[in-house]
Length: 395
Image: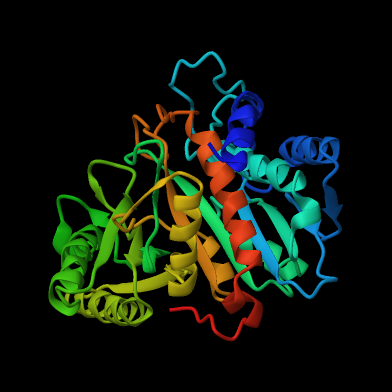
């Protein structure tokens, strides 16, 4: 057993206690004040310095120095919870009504703290600087941009992050070059018709009929406009119209999401969206307005960093597997637009998928994820290609 593995296993009870404290006290996006205070306390107790970046919630900490000419490596964890009522029955279940860590961000935070503790023990050996990003508001896809505006990624040569994966067993890590997670855009479609008595439909123009045709027509975008070798998901998730059983309303509103893994496909689908909606609305004598809610771009892993990640995983005693890309979105992608980055899936042997009220994970994964992040930072600081920066290029 290596020293890093032994140290991580020794930390396991502490990391479990941290994760459970965070799990019991979840806070939603941009409300993570107590979470931030707790993270600050744990870091300060370990003698880890807090960097001064203007973030209302979340924080940045640092280890090591660039005085020797070494690079700056960033490790990131998200800290926010979801507006979900927990149904796990765990003894450390959320005490906040209607709030839950149903995506495992408590696990991510504890993992990064564990990596910070391990790296602190080796701070004198660090050949550069490690910047620890405890990011707010991932669930609203705005936290990464807050961090970028704060300047916390300035001077960073490479950024690394992870997400728990319930369907991967503990002890495994999913590492993939290229697209790992999807761009996640939202949309709202407003259809205007003319209201009338339901018994006299010819006296009005029914927006519900138009909405129904639009829902069906939108599905043809993926089946007939996206190559079978590419992928895209179009889901209409809400339809709101009318207030009475015997009145045809004058308006219908639909909401939904578009998921794509390629910017070219993303652009093409969005163009066809407008054409299909306008065409259907015009054919049925209605008008329709399309509003896009811009989400994060796809998570595109740097190939050089993917190789480095596999090397670090094996050194940390994890089994590397090829993960199936997820159509969920991740605002870590915004970092990857600025600097080369790698995002991986850590196996947690969970019972439910992300965002489920019964979401749980196996806490034995904590020492694995902590030492993987620590090993990754150590290896990255010694990577000649990262030091030269120019040799890395985002896919």
